[in-house]
Length: 277
Image 1: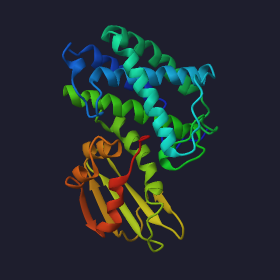
Image 2: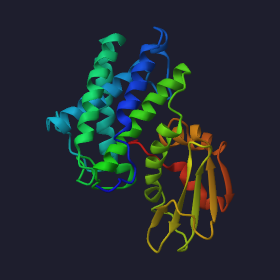
Image 3: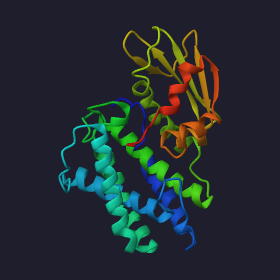
Image 4: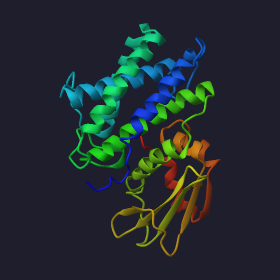
């Protein structure tokens, strides 16, 4: 079988092992610490990760989708529906102890990883990657999106308790490579002469470089440098993941981002989201 564009299946067990190790190291006070996930504490974020495990196992293994959603006619309707699901779960699990939560995360994490591994990467996914503008996605992209969910929520916890561990090339690069798939959709309404190129650099050895090229009616994302670049945007890894998950605002991020060349062509990246928000 040919190599998938962004391989992540092998990383799920390793990332989950990091999560369990992290949670077991927390003090009672750590569980109540606030995170960048708005009103969620460390414990709330951890319970959200458990919800993700249970939902995926139910859908992929058991073909069970729970309560039918209300009528969803737009992207905003879908986001509102998901936000309500998330809020309901976090409220219900307030009564769950950290020890019980860790045990359930460990058990369901293993089953989750096995479910993901059984999917044919080139078959249609049960859900599209809507933040990339897709109405139908292949499993490899859906799986990569799921990886970004697990990564960025774990990193929210790590930031809150000041315990590094997954800002490494192994774990971070697949995350940011997946996030960058939202670039063409982000620029879909930006008009530019054909051939205009935006270079996006996520700095340091854990980052990478991507090129967005304007065609007659769309934007094309590649990793191959064209002859000329019209705008360069350089973002540090920490700002990048936080910007694309709404952990920092566009205005906050702009102070940390370096623009070169045509800033008006590079600035739309500040509006990019790689989560359902």
